[in-house]
Picture 1 (cartoon, rainbow, N blue to C red):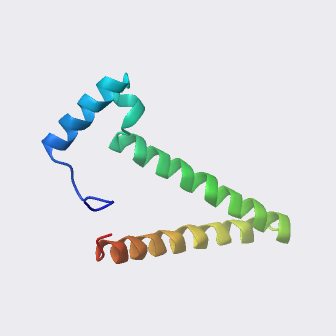
Picture 2 (cartoon, one colour):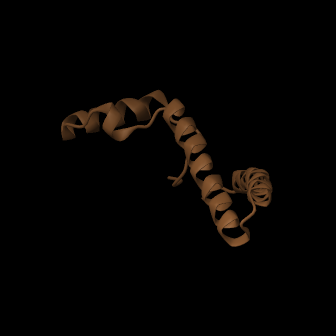
Picture 3 (cartoon, rainbow, N blue to C red):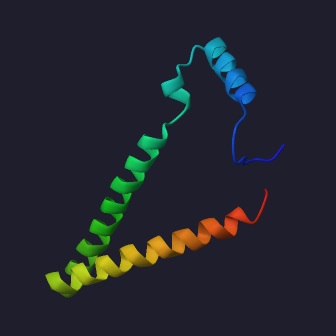
Length: 93
């Protein structure tokens, strides 16, 4: 069985729900919603880019340069992440 799957079947979800019920776990303790994942991704990007801009400001003392570095970092990492995901989509592990 592959470590990662593209989608779960209804049977997989039902089996997991039964196992979680047997363990006394609620759905919210075992599965994260898509909305929560998206919100976490957005807030993490804000934290990471703010950190980069803070470091850039600390090193340069220039707000404009720090913001430019932050924008470049944000766009570069967005592109790199997309390429990374597309490369991983080619492999089944």
